Length: 284
Ligand code: PAF
Image (tube, rainbow, N blue to C red; front, side):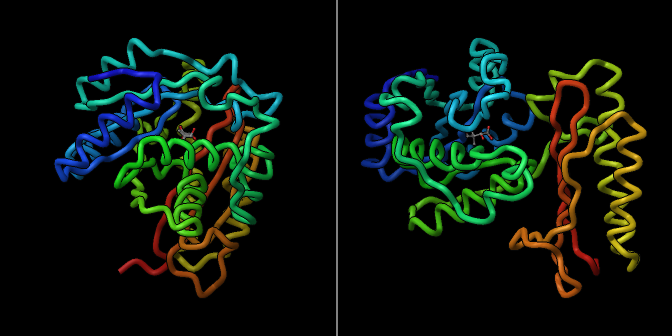
């Protein structure tokens, strides 16, 4: 695997592959890689001739009180995992290369409405930072396709919307969430949990599943969500949001929506955990 912090090196390799008529898949990450990321790389390898990965802890998507400096940076271990998974090119730019004029002078991309709710409401500016860095990385790598985890459901929808709205010639592929045996969705932020919190964190998926079961049995989802939030509080969580939405538009679910998503964020100890599960109201 070639590791580079230079845009020109990325472009040279991608250009050479393209001349040979070969395809390129891209997996953007912030590093501290876990099985969820590795699944994205392996899936990318089944779909394209070459896989490019980026590791960049993007300051633009962190709020002033968030964990930018404390975000785990584990480049050596990450590189080993990427080599084993079959990535060929790793882009590790510096913040100075990506934002040479500083964040305040940076042109940005904002996907309206969808970026302001749920995680966007709790983390103002977060999705502006995500959309901007993903657009920049897309312009640098120029892949045929890019893969993202469905765990970040709102992020995935924002990136799909951006690509469609700005006519970017890139296929955006969502890959299923990888979970621990307990049901806990894999996330770099699980590293902030103590052993006891990690055990209790599995309640988040159980609470989501309880709402799905209630909705599929025709019960009122408001009541099911209130009960689920109680379960979470009993497990030591402070819920941020817990909602039933349309899985197609992320708008509030209406009675006519069949393709739904239960989407939640909650604080446990030092971690803010997010999770979601999509489902059919009337499974066949
Ligand atoms: O999901 C992430 O790790 C980040 O939000 C992403 C897409 C790499 C952009 O920084």
